Image (tube, rainbow, N blue to C red; front, side, top):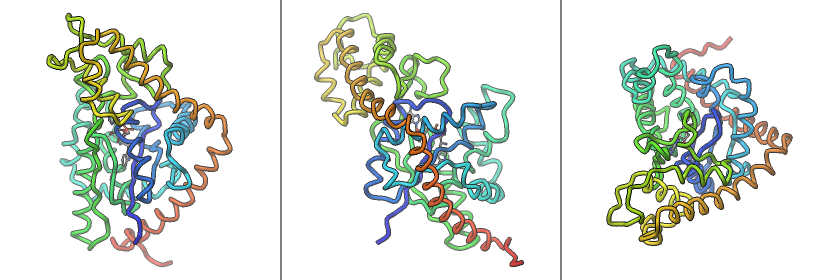
Length: 331
Ligand code: TYM
């Protein structure tokens, strides 16, 4: 039986965070054993927000190196850059024509961005359709994502269903894979919002390439209450719960086990131990990363072969869709 297809991607819009790792990359590493996986670096999505990004090529190579350092295996999975496969944008235009404007206007991420900026480009509005194209182009069955992307996958499923109702079973209807633990790692200091690589307050983020001393500093800055000890029974400090969630997400050890270990510890010991666990974990990824990042030819070969493989499938599938909607005339 043919293996089912998994598609997912990350924007190369800055250094990846521990939220990206726990929310998705860790899951990708597991999924590549069982499925045919496509892991894209979605640079076209990143230009909706990042302009004059002269560093985009470096950011792409950084992101690719992090994929590999975390355990994505280019012999098992297809890794490619979104903008190298023109079929994504071509399908995106087609899907625009099958999506109601009101559906896009309802997207939470769009509404949030509209609220904070008056100067908003249409790329941000159409962003979920490009995402749907990424997914539908490869007949994807599963899409591993963090919780913030859930609504976009629902939209993708609606578009695919609408299309199938008109033209027959063209698209697989993809399912989101949102993992129970760590699907929404919160900001370190502002625990009401998710940790995001574009946050201006760097004390909110732990990057995968964060230096040990900065991990300690950022965790030390998390507010604790006036009592001196961590007590499970008074467990309502969201900053500390977020740390427990991060520890569990990284190590796979249950949150309760950490809670028991930290019970009755003074907060500074709790924070030091947590920082140590995180720094040790990231240290291994960082060692891999710095080894890989130097090998430019190796990285470019991965992109080259990934592009060839993805392109072949994308081209074939797009041709089928174009034919189905009646746009192709033989000349
Ligand atoms: P992006 O680049 O913002 O984030 C990449 C993935 O990481 C997840 N994530 C998190 N998970 C848990 N806690 C966090 N704090 C956290 N921050 C980020 C995101 O949910 C996401 O899954 N539009 C997408 C990229 C994309 C895509 C696709 C994903 C483009 N096409 C097709 C899946 C399928 C995005 O901007 O993700």
